[in-house]
Image (cartoon, rainbow, N blue to C red; front, side, top):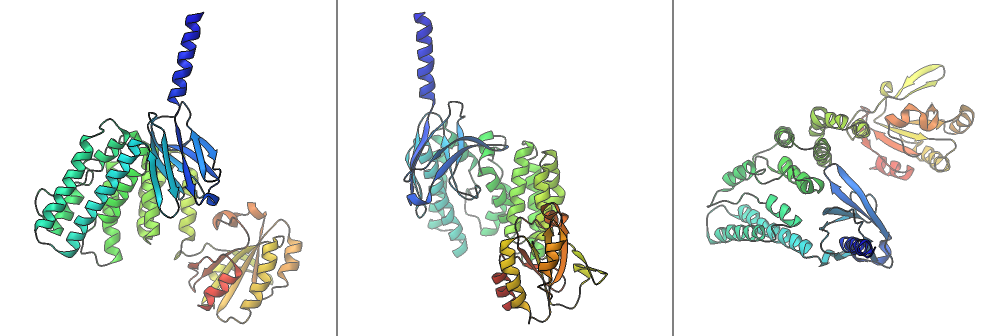
Length: 439
């Protein structure tokens, strides 16, 4: 019996020891209320634990079952913007201070300090090399010193702490460093050729973090010829890089491939490259999402494509004076305002009459107001008070097809179109509609 008790006590003490924590302080304290920890895996984020933030202080007691790896600490929404990534190795507690102005300071965790120190130093040295090439293109002592510094930092950090999680990132981050002086054209050529040399794409810890996907994005959108002079040329070269990247990541899990390619699609959107977006989606991302049973992502991208600035609006139809009318056949205006509203929506009843009043003297403008309704009678009475608008009705309200087609999440929702019915603005209120049309 004593032996059994001893074994139980030993097991209990080991369990306590294996359970670590992540703690620290946030400031300004009033801006932080909660914190959620997710383990970063190849297939996405996996919930681990959460805690309240009280007076700027928090402590996450990590589950005994938590795996060593990279963890994402989310402190606000949207979750993909407001987060901190830290290494949790199950051997040391992690503590840090985070300030909205100054950022992250690790106060306890040798591994996280090591990780952050490496990236700080190597980034600064890489910036020196870029600055050198921007300012001059001849070999000199400064160039030799920069190259030596890059080699020293990389080698020193690679040779130490080889068993740590941080070491995975440090080794994979080895960039091309010239053995001797190269002019900028030769350097960029070699840098591109060797971009993928050290990326351990099958390492699950690297797959779970943003490290690899950021490396792919850097290649796709930065490893480009210096003599590009048009958006068309840029599109062609970026697509070539997309193909190289997609081929490189084929051996990885489908969830990781989807995430990596989706990030490329998102960056193309931010940089105003719709042709690249469409290419990525049609040739790669849609297939990956369907294979990964992620129809939701397919629907979201198809909707974003339909509604993006520059795209022709989907059609809207209505009956008036016994005749069928449609948005896409409507003529005679330089601009069209499309608004989705409801006669039972208090915000709509405040904004639409005001908008009707503000726009009554606008020439070369037509407004199509689509009522998302459960029944017609009230809609008819309210819409009759705004005779200068073209009125369409979408029965079924949130179940109406217009809701899905136009991605309506609330009423009123506004779109402004040009003379060819292309989206040119998506104002958030009646005042923003008027302000846009004035300018």
